[in-house]
Structures are given as structure tokens and as C-alpha cells.
Amino acid sequence: VFDAEDTWFITWDVLRRDADGDFWFVDRASRMLRTKAGVVATRSIEDALYGFVALRHTVVYGIEQDGVDRPVAVLVMQGNRGLDLAAWNEFVAGLDPRERPAWVKRVERIPMTDGFRPDKSALESSPLGAGAELFAYDETSQRYGVMPRDGSAVRA
Image (tube, rainbow, N blue to C red):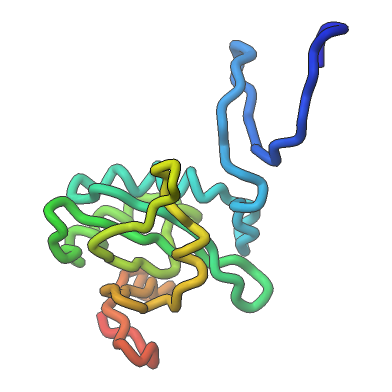
């Protein structure tokens, strides 16, 4: 609202302003994750994960656990192949720890809205391991391992 005829409305979009005065979309306020390391945008995690060359599509959302949000990355790989865990672990070792999802879920397709956008709500409402290969991050080894279908433990 800068001039007399301007209007505005609340979108709940979080923007940042660069040195040139331009505004850039960060994330929806409702999608920001409240992690142990502070507030993290799901979009920033998605952007970081796109550095993995075998990745075709990803969506990140959070699961609240012990009072903080833990990120889940849902991945579709090129050619719907399985996740090369050794290559993935090598890739994520170069990421900022805030960009490393707690869980990685490899699926064959990501549900889309009628407007052809990823449907994060549909992913959030389905069980974590439903219809997917599931991998969990182990903070001690700083590596991902296959998570058994019963969710009992992580195998490296």
C-alpha cells in the first residue's frame, strides 16, 4: 500500500527483499518448519535437494515430533528408479544440516491439485511409510538408512 488507490490483502506468503529492493517468495507461513535449529522454509529444503542429479521431483513437509517439526522429503527419481542410497548419503553430506530431512520417502508419483501443484495436504494426511520406500536420517552416523515397514528401527 504505497499510493492512495493501492489495495492489499493478506496472503500469508513469506517474502524476502533483496539488495535491489525486489521481493522473492520464501514459503507459505503455514509451511514454515519450527525445527531445533530455528524456522526453516520447506521451499529452501526442496531447492537444496534439487542439487541431487537423479531427482525428478520433490516435496517437503513437516511432522511434529517432541515439540518441533521434522522435515519429510518425498522424492520421485528420474525414470522412477530406486534411491541410490550411497550417492544420496554422499550428496546430503554437503548440505547444511537444516536442509537434511529426517525422513526420505521415495514414491512413483506425487499427488497434484486441480491447479497442477503438488498436494502437500494429501501427503501430510497419509501415513509416513504408506506405499513408499522409506529412509530415516541417523544423527549419530549422519547417514540415511532403510527404515523397515514396521518403523521399528533404521538399517544402514
